[in-house]
Length: 92
Image (cartoon, rainbow, N blue to C red; front, side, top):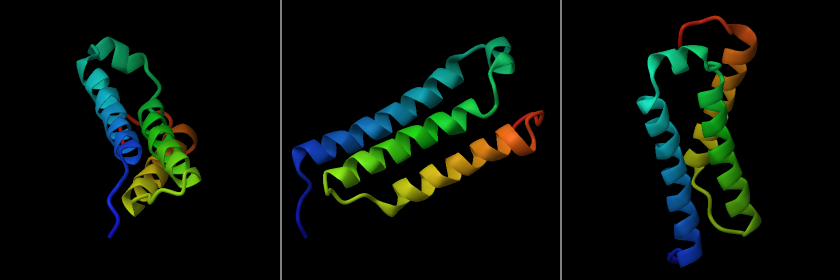
């Protein structure tokens, strides 16, 4: 089994760091800001990061974990549900 290159490992670390950063910022926001924020914004940001990272890695012919694709598609599905099906729900 071939080892990952430094660049490939760096992209994966950046992907997970961005995900942690988004959820940390949301955790630190006040309740009034969270109440005014659209419910679909969080899953959309996660989907963009995961699927964007997957596409970037795939374009470089690096191996992309199936978890990256699955989690990105699930987050995109939750974005769709939050935006179109139940936009007034308190949370998913």
